[in-house]
Length: 212
Image 1 (cartoon, rainbow, N blue to C red):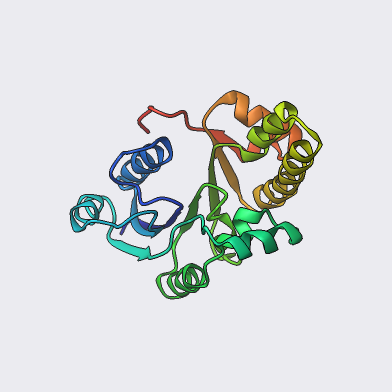
Image 2 (cartoon, rainbow, N blue to C red; image 1 turned 60 degrees about the vertical axis):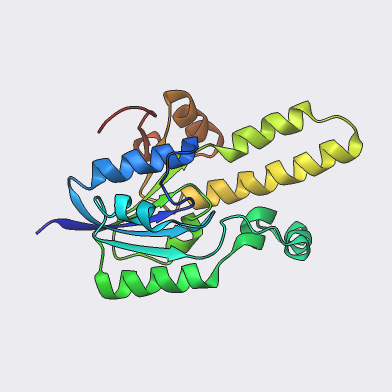
């Protein structure tokens, strides 16, 4: 019997319309040769039946949470600024996603659990019966630090500084709770190791465009 992999995706990984979807798609396709996959994904747009059929070639079960990964709710976003969590994480938190993940982890008992991007990582925090892998994709702390460095004006610098610091503590705390964190390049891996204090042996590199 094949081992079981629970994959939680920020984006439905088809069609291949942007970089994160392309990466998730090819990682799932590669994993399907070694694992039976249950995919749980947010719906960043209306998911067409043909897209589900295509991904079904790699996944034995597909669960779609009918919610975008980033909620455009003005009040939740404002409350997010008062939260220690990044505003996007606070505003986009999905109880249906958390409930579905808990249900699958309890009944299906995966051998491994994988989060595609730090946006879905919180939903795997309570899973402790199997190894957990985080595919970081874009290192948001690094990107926000660059935005802070380039910001102009007091208000702009203050806003970008707050966003950078929140994501710094969030990504650092999150990465420490995963057994392995995948990066797209050696430069990203080294940055994560140095700035987020993650041991290098718990960091891997899977470049984009490379078949596993």
